[in-house]
Every structure is written in structure tokens, then in C-alpha cells.
Image 1 (cartoon, rainbow over the protein chains, first blue to last red):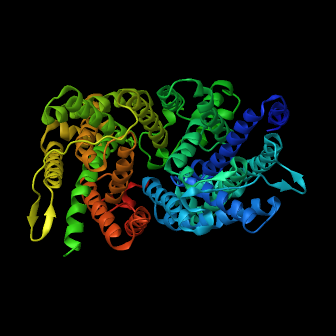
Image 2: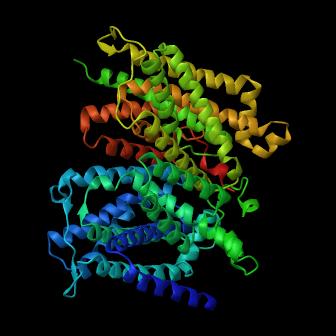
Length: 334
Length: 291
């Protein structure tokens, strides 16, 4: 555990100092990737750790984004209040999904959460405050009198919030709560036999996941400065799911890597003609998941960390949904 | 004028096409454990192939549809070959892999067939049938007929042929099927091909109604997916029931409640039904599967 600290510090230093040498637009893209990473982390807590699949996380992003924006623009709340408020509001609404999640699992839960995403997308424009289908714009906020107008200043806000949340998540997954997530994912019956309450653990998983995604949505609203409900469609939910599958399920570095990879890839490919980027994007998605079934992070652990004990935890954390049904498990592939 | 019977009949016609699409997805899922998110794009490419043959090369309708079915089969079989190295990966990983295939097909579709929305010819035109005041267009009648015929055909294939028996054996236990001499690779490729071919048939029958572009089939896919899950996702009969039910529900909600919030209400109803029957209407019971 201690041996990791130098690497984490190096990464943080790089993230803090690197953007000084980047162009404003590049900093903006990096900020966007960081927002995606936060949302992917939220989804991974729910899907990777607690085993509850969600095809409706774009709905949480939308709720976080809209509530932060409305609190700022309509009620003139300052950023330091609207940001956590948006996260808490999203978390509370996330509890709506606990009701189906207590009855449904796997593909059935996927449809229920997909329905949630669709409902948010259809209901939000019905409300006059949200500007309907036209959407509305949000000015960049200030924090304690400090204007966050430049992309670089806002990047540092996202970085600070992001690092704090990553640190909390990294601790949470090792705390009893995180262990309970993994326990209900691996075997609900056995977890209950150990005294873990399914209802309470699933509620916490949805609360935590929705909170993270809501914060990401709030940051997104201020970063992009414009909200339109059509952004938060099923495609975005699927993109988030792709990010954690590509990066690595049940892995915090995996969430961040996957978001960075899939979030920045379109920018790298933007030089090609119309159909090529999408084709390469699809091919990259396909190749990564075929040849690294446990994600990029799982692959790195496999190649770099062999014999250092990391592999064992990767094996335990990456069996995926199928290990549960006890059929042809993923162990032979790990 | 009685609106209710009319809404139900049109709903059944639309639902039969969702059912056809769902049948293909379930066939693939049962034998290979892959939830195929590329199903819509496979249907899209197949439909565009049919359209190009008709418009560009002036081939008759039946030939174009046959070509679409063949195209569907080839795309499905290719997907199976591509996914073969990842056979043991987690279900979610496989789902994301089919998403990659979906994006690639969509890109290719845009390159070869363009990004505009085009109209697609009906199989049958002419005076609609009127039965007891309810209008049934010839196209809708055909859709219902084709869906029923293909559904029954698939049932017969699975029940009475050796290939079908092999598919059912694979669905139960791949390893055991292999040990009993089933060529699991060939059967898996065949299931993929057949599943995607069913999707192609659904595609050419839906395209006249919703028009054809790169994305219309994705909307259809989501509905077919929802229908399949509603039916239980492992049951072929469930897919038919789920598809028809979804088509009717959609029409009833649109007719009586709200068109703006149609999808929201439909999903709400699906979630309520799933809450009552957590494994779908005709899915396997919960207790049996848990280890």
C-alpha cells in the first residue's frame, strides 16, 4: 500500500502542473475528460463494485447538471453551496431506483434503469424552468470571490473536487461499506447470511453512485456553460458503461483510465474524414474488450503486477457478472 | 368510431415486428450468452442493401429482401467469429464488444449509404382490409403473418431438427453439449446468422413505417430489447408476448394518455410488470438459477 504513494503523488503533480503548458482548448478537453471520469467512477461504484447494472446514468448527470444550474441561475446560490446541493439532490433521486433494484437484477435491472434515463430525458423539458428543448446557458461561477472564467481556473476546481472524491471512493471501497458492495455483488444470499442488509447496502450504492454522478453533472453544466436535455440520452449512459468496461470494472484507476481513453479518443481522431473516426472508435472499443476482458487497468495489472499480489485482488474483483451464475466463469481467462 | 380496437390492432402489427427483432436477440443470447447491441445496425445495413438493390439496380422486391436476409446472416456470422476470442469474458464486456461492432457498422453505413433519411417501399400496397370497422393495412397484415410464420418456423426448428436440438443443448450447458458431440462453434455461428437474419426481416418490414436512416433501427432495437426483457429474455414465446404487449401498450398510451411522454409511460408500465414478475413474464423462476 505504501509503495503506491510516490506514484499517486507523481500523477497528482502531473495533473496539477501539466495544464500550465497546454492550450486553453486542450485544458477544456482535459476538464471534460475529468468530468466523465468522475461520472464513470460513480457508475463503477454501483456496477463494478455493487454489481447493479445501470443504463440510466445519463439521467443522474442531467439531474445534477440541471439542479446545479437552476440553483445558481434562478436562486442565485453560490458555487460552494450549489455543487454539493446538486450532488445531494441527485443522490436522493437515485433512491428511486432502489425500489426496482431490490426486485430486479442483471438485464431486468438494465431495462428498469434505461426507463429511468428515458423518463428524465422526457420529463425535464416539460418543466418551464429548464428552458424546454431549447436548453439554457449558465455563466461560469465564482468561488469565494474568485472568478473561474478561464478554462485553467475551472480545471483546477474540477481537479480539486475530483481528487477529493477519488480519495473518498478509494477509502470507501476498502471500508465495510465497500466490502458489503462486493459481497452483495458476488452472492446476495451469502452476503445476507453474513448479516449484510440487501436493502441498506443497495440504497447506499445508489446514493453514493448518484451523488458522484450528480457532482459530475453539476461540474459539466458549469464547464460547458450550456445545458440541453438531448445531451443526456441513452448514448451517454452507454458511453459511461463502456468507459468502465474498457478501463476496468470494480477499479478506481480503471474508471479514470477508461474515461480518459474514450473521452479523449474522439478528439485524437477528429482529423479524419466523417466516417473514419466512428469506425476506429468502434474498433478500439471492440479490440480493447476482446483482448483485455478485464479492462485496460486489469491488463496492466496482469502484465506489470504479476507476482506482486496485485493479480490476486484483480482476480477477485474482476470476475464480472457471470461468476455469480456459476456457469463458465472468467477465471480461465484472468 | 371505436378507437380502442383500432389501437390494439395497429399495436399488434407494430409489436409483431418488435417480437421478430427480439426473437433474433434471444436466439443469440440463449446459445452464446451475448446480448447483441449491434442487432439494430445489422438490420439497418441489411435494409439499406435491399433498398440499394431496388433503387440502384432495379431488382424486384423479393430478391432485394432475400439479399437483405443473406446480408443479415453474413453480418451475424461475422460477429460470432469476431467475438470468438472473448467467449469467456463477462457478459457486460461482451455487450460492450457488440456496441463496438454497432459503431463500426453505423460508420460503414454512413459511408456507403449516406446520412440522409430515405423512404422504403411497402411490401404490399392496396386497399386495406376492414374487419368489423377496424382497419388493417395490407402491410400490417403481412407483418403479422410473417412474424407468426417465422415465430412458428423458429419454434419448429428448435423443437424438431437436430440443429435446433443442438442449439437448445448449448443454451442449457455449452460444455455438456460439446461433450455430446455438438459442434458448438458451428451452432453458435448458425445461431448468430439466423438471429441477425430475423433482424433483417424485421428491418425491411419496419423501414417503410419509420423510414430508414442510420439511427431509426436503434430506436427499434431498444424497444425490441425492452420487449425481450419483459418476456423473460430466455423465452422465445416470451419475446413474442413481450413484443406484442409492448406494441399494444405503446399505442394505448399514445392514444389515451400522452404522446409526449409515451416512452416514459411505457417504461413505467414495463417496470411495474417486472416488479411483479422479476424474471419477466415467461422467464425462468428466480430460485432455480441462483447458486
